[in-house]
Length: 284
Ligand SMILES: O=C(O)C(=O)C[C@]1(C(=O)O)C=C[C@@H](O)C=C1
Image 1 (spheres, helix red, strand yellow):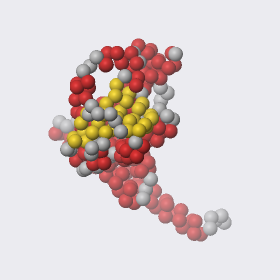
Image 2 (image 1 turned 60 degrees about the horizontal axis):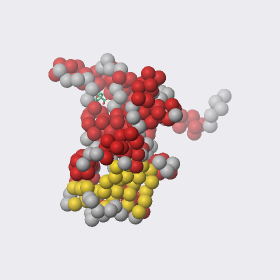
Image 3 (image 1 turned 30 degrees about the horizontal axis):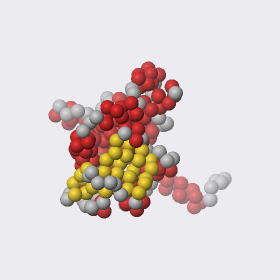
Image 4 (image 1 turned 120 degrees about the vertical axis):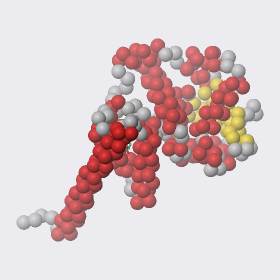
């Protein structure tokens, strides 16, 4: 006797059929990846193409959005097939440290379960030798303000090139937003002039304040703005509306629009700063 009501049995047959279709599609994908691998090898191209992976993920996330699929599902599935393609081409998925930078949201957890426990002991010992940000402060304060401002303008110009070009930062026109990093003893004010964000010497109307590590974690998307503000690791002062608009914009920024090199550099810098802070705290 079949304990399942017939409607449920029918639905389950449909689910089985779709599961089979998925596996068939995976077999088809593997064949195409195999052919692509051969072509790349013949052309002397490297097996990995991070830009292409990024496009695969961005396309998939776009389709998932149109289909009403949870983005984590699409991201997880695509991460799995890309990691499989790496293995198919003789690459070890543990060798690549930049996958989080590519997607902006951890890719490895989808592949390998929870992340490994913090840095390994020898690395932790080395990290403890890194001076904490407050020790850098006296050195940094000697850098001429004009240099700092130019470096900041170049960095934000690069990071925010796409939203700037689309006019998404127009709300900042004539407004002054501050960034304060008390542990480094640094603070800057940014203003949109023409189509560029420029450092200003005028006082800020709203200021985002946080430690160097937390701001890096935000910029690299290793932690999200909600968590950081909720835990009071970041603080917003001054004109709340301006600050919140800037914050919401940062949250919505398409990470794919940030140049790959910048994403990788941010990701590495933020991980290093976080690991160094953890190692330092453990010791304290
Ligand atoms: O397109 C390729 O060259 C592939 O090998 C396939 C694929 C993918 O799975 O989509 C995998 C690895 C590359 O880094 C880029 C893309």
